[in-house]
Length: 492
Image (cartoon, rainbow, N blue to C red; front, side, top):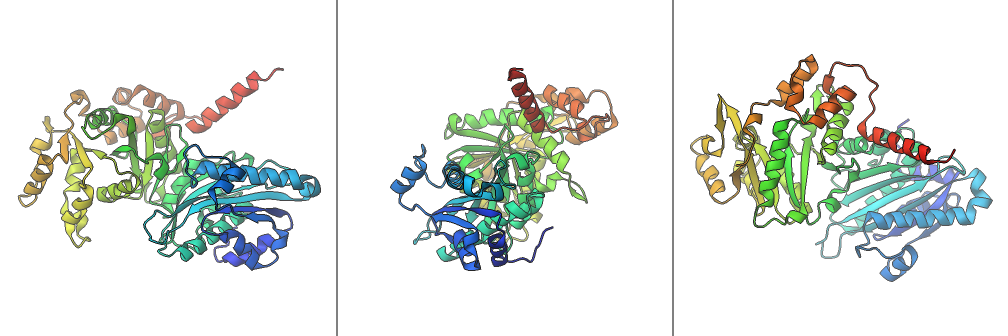
């Protein structure tokens, strides 16, 4: 049961008084705040086998090994810390305490705000733990951004979220959604954000990390989450670092031929830009929370996974975000990369962008939003649409007279450009129309979507396709197939 009102000190004390739980702390950067919380709660000798910090890089490398990247605040460093410290616990204490103890190793590697307040404060935090004595271990790993404007406040927030993580691992492990929710107890998103979470281990075999990432966005713990083409969760600042980013937003329910044409030809045109290195380009499909909500009841998680599965199977990186307005999305991406950003949009999207009513809450109105949206290295690639049997492009795009000069300025300064290479035969395709055909079981919709998409919709009865089948997410299908291959390879 989720105990919403339990405080950080009470959580630490409960763990200290639980004689089954015993482990070590290794914290690099921003002090040993999590261990300090347990010391201050009282009874810490029942919990802490060891606490340490290796601030000096030479000492750290000697203990955990050298990182190929030369960076220290990275997930690979955190995993090395967890592995090293947990193996030491088992090596030194398994015989003495193993039958009666559930061991854990907590670690973090963090860079807090510097004295000049010029750096990006962030860190990796993880807990490796057993739920039963002598059982296999599990990992819960998160990445955080620290937003307090004082170093001491950031340290305090790290201590709180560290206690929340260890407490959640032991007392909310049967409900991963509750564990995620509890991570921000006694904290606010204005102080710290969690932009990635990953569960691993035998007790989390059925946990889909993409759903856990969705909960991060839905609960307001972060504004965006990212998945790779293999369906694995990614940490945005690492995945998009020094990348040219091309984004297409949509409901994508389902992906149709026209949307694949938008992505493919938009990407080709983006790579042809003189200031774009095609070897550093990443193409993403973006789903907003608004587009994920199928009805008033909120987000259909199965429907969300259906869309992510299909997009990943088409080789797409997928982002889910809480950014309804395009300029907010651009502001977020510009924080992650200094290279060029492209947005693939249709004419209806362009009409939305130039609708002044969307920016009434901004003091500077549409001009204030455009200052961000059309910043130095951002460009819109506009895919044509079909209106009354005629192809409608930027040349036919109509605006109120007061906005026309603004639009022409952006076109002439290479901020807006038509996608010139497109398949005219796809322009009549409507995503909503295809969805209705699928749900009614009409013939012919298969020709309007990529062949792989049609196969997945039929095989897994996606998007209301009328059939009966036991639904197994594509990611789980892959895992089951791998397990079957392993079993077949074992000599009888």
